[in-house]
Length: 120
Image (cartoon, rainbow, N blue to C red; front, top):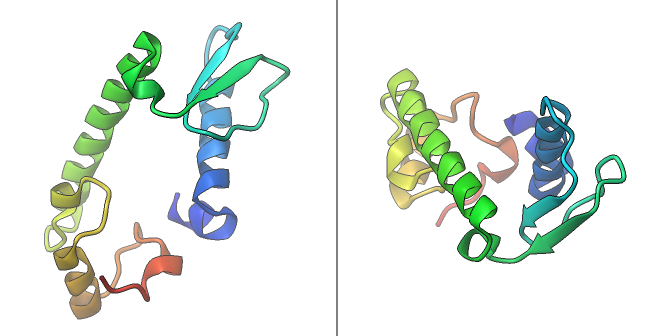
C-alpha cells in the first residue's frame, strides 16, 4: 500500500510484503530465493539473495513472469478507475506525462505522497 511505502520506505515495505506472502503459503518452504540484494530472515528459513535472479534461477524466472503479468493487470485496472492517468504506459514507473497529470489533476489515493514533489 502507498501509505506503508511512504512510512517504511520501498525496501522495508517490499520485505514486509514478501513476509506476508510467505505467511499465506499453505506449505512452509524449505528454502527462499530472493531476487535482489537484501532480505530479512523469515521464520529461520534459509535464503539466498541473488541480484538478477530473474535471469538465472528457473523458479525466480517463473515468479517474475507471474508478478509482471499481475502488475500489468493491476495497472490496467488502475487505468480504468482513474482513466485520466495512463498507468499502463509506465507499468508502475513514473513517466513525464504521469508527473504532468499529477501536477494538473492532483494525485490519486494510489500515489505515494512522499514522491509527489519530484518532477523529471
